[in-house]
Image: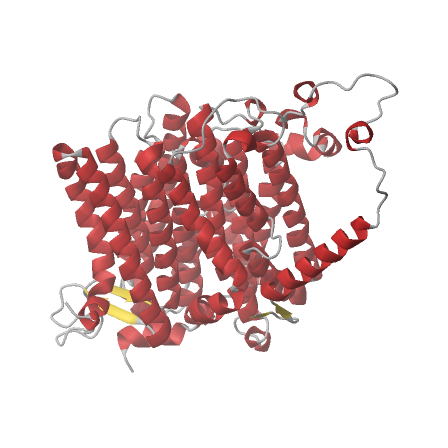
Length: 518
Length: 111
């Protein structure tokens, strides 16, 4: 197997590998528990390695196309047809960027889970579902087909719902899962209805092909409203965020970290619809403005609702909403300016900030949820009032928490500062009030995490507990390493990873051309 | 080094500056009085009352930012009111926002 073959087939391989592994996991589980754990971790490591190699190739050489079932994977339109009729996977810089996030968070979550769910039952099912979540995320990020996007959204939602309810002996876990399932089903129906509207009008399902003939008709506008509402709800935008704290707080900690990445897959779908499917046909001021408003509401309501929380994971869930607001603000500013001359100066910088914040958030929020899980693992409570003094007995967890908290609050030199700075400066050019709100939210975020640090880790030694198990510390260390690396070398990260992603998202013509030719 | 809209951000430079400032602060601290009594003078002065134990005065999460929440009571009451925890309400908000998006998208054409 040479490198060219691997890179050519990577789009399909990166979906097929965890999919096949998911169905093999229950079989291996019957043979040996240790073999199952080794198998799952090996698959996640291989997935991560292939993803890094593939993403690097996409960032360097541009869009990769993979036509399912074609003798030549790059042949998107069969000789007898004039439009793409097969399922086409199309991976540009943005898709590869999101794939990197999904694979990294899944690897950290998988390793962390080894100890975290040690005492739980049904671990074979747990790992099967964990791999299916990865399939759903990567599928959504790599597909170039709108119906296929709906299918992977469903795979992701159902697997997430099952994992939220994994500890079904807790009533709140089942309740959180039920709410997630109901609201996700309605969102999926919205998406399906939008897909049907496109198919009825254009006889097409391929995103690039649809974008090439998009007329922005009344039906297209209806589909746009449905898609924007569905994906904005799925990524937890205020005021459609209510399911988020209910689901995030009750899922096992490793799964909560994956739910953050799963929500970002929906955020990606929202951006893909706006920039690629509709592009310049949109009324950019209305939809860009809508994303900015969603962003501001999410930032402010998320952080202010986090402050009074006493449940550590519920508090962090509200912060996840708040941080999603930064991404919506940054990319929303980019969309707002897409057709204006200012786009090339600060519009693209705002997008870079928003997109950089996606990966930063996945890393530090993932880390924070893992630290909350480590605390829960030892104390068996999420109530901050029942915690205190854990810095004495869980020093590594405390250090990981401090790093995550400083990163999310945007304290230099951590990665959160770099992405927020890009957003602040670019948003200021559109309206200073946007930057002022964003900075105020950062201050409140810091205040909120000072409360958590004080309540959980500072004070006299109350609980005589041990440090978290090694595999959990390794899971946290992986994300911490990425946070520190991104914090110290933001210029390298933006130039080599974030800028290609932002450029790819804004470049609708290249996305269409890769499939349709011409 | 990261180029931003208005300038640049270099974390390595920031860390060097931080270390230099910390060293200067440490040197200034060295000019302080040498007759400082570590044990006695470190205790808080509570009008002669014995200092309570750390366990007794430890502030729990529920009491932190009490003033902030009280000052924004009206806002928090409104927020708590809409965070009902009922799935029907979640769906209602979702559908309501979709309708607002419909109106915004179509209304702009009319205007």
